[in-house]
Length: 213
Image (cartoon, rainbow, N blue to C red; front, side):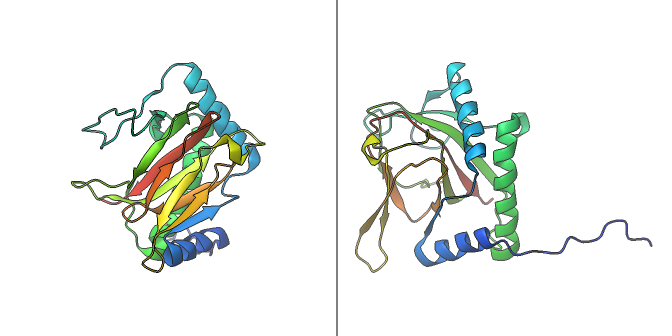
C-alpha cells in the first residue's frame, strides 16, 4: 500500500518548552513574545471594533450556566469568542493557541480537549477581586491564559495589574504583572488565586482557559 502522507517529525519548540518548564517549576509563566507587535495590534483593533458594535456584556461570576453579575467583585465587560465564526484576527489567535495545545498534549499528555476565550475590557475604575478560576462543580479548567492588548506606552500608573498569589515555600508571595501590550500570562487554574487591581486607564485583553473533559 502506498503511503500518501509522511508523518511530520516532532520538533521541539523552545518557547513552548520554557512555558512548560516555568509552569512546572512555579505554576505560572510570563511570555513577552507569544504574539508579535503586529499581531497584538490586529487583535486590539478587532476588540475595539466589536466593542463599538455594542456586542459586549457585563462580566459575571460563576460558570456560563449559572452567572451572577456583582459589580463589587468584578467590573469588566466581555465578549465570548467563537472559533467557528472567527474573523481573520481571531483565526490568527486561535491558530497559535491550537499550536500550543497540540504541543502540550504531545509532550505533557495534559488531555486538553476544549478551550474557551473572551475579549475583556476594563473601563476606568473597574477591577476583579481575588478569586480562583475553577468551580466547585466543574474542575475542567487546567490552564488560564491572559493576552494583553493595550496600546503601546502603557505605564504602571495606569493600574490594572494582575496579582498572582503564590506559595512557593508555604508562605504567600505576590507576583505583580503589569498588562504591557503583547504580554501573555499562563498559570494553573486550579491552584493560583489572583486579582486585577483597579484600572486607571481602559484595559484590554483576551482571557481564557484550556480545559479537559
